[in-house]
Length: 302
Image (cartoon, rainbow, N blue to C red; front, top):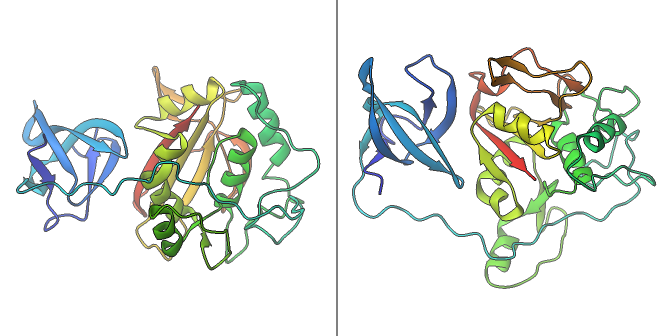
């Protein structure tokens, strides 16, 4: 049992780092998160080596002990996700990559590639088909007032055969499900659209129920994609009125490789829509660690 928690009187969020600050952030722990002390850093005992459990994944790193307090009382249990939690989708309605409307509905074209096996070549075929960087694919093209990283991530996961919601149940529908009911999918009534900030939270609450597994290194993401699996990075903005971001990690191919330090992946190969769209590229920065983001998650699915 953990003996310490992130002190809510000292920090609403606390960075778990690979070492003493400014070492890389491995995860962001919300206030109240329980941690187990494993030791102290050999160079500075105020930095504790700890283990935390986040959305079903265990991660170790270093925290400044000044932001921790002893746990007292009974820990608050997570609300369990009902067994058999149903996915939800709006019905297809012929929406195309070339259309600048209908983004709440799934892509619905006559011949769309799908992943039938853990085959990197199939992933490459999918991202080349979706091709978010093509100007005529208006479904993904940014505007001055909106970007569509969430739309592209949903379409990508759908073609990969894994569930990432475009719309999700509202509170009234979740209460019905928890009581054993089966609500209808009714836009703006029982379901709502999810942006990247909302998807960050969806992964933490419901991702495990749909086969997603949290990891804590870009190496794990790139390895999963190279083996034909799905890798996602999602980050939530501090200012939730502003856009977060979500992007897919895709296989290394051709002359396109992840940026590495030795065997460790620093920046994986990615595919995204957003303020800038590209089919496959190794980004120039680890954007998910930017100070504008409140939290981030790295997720894989077989």
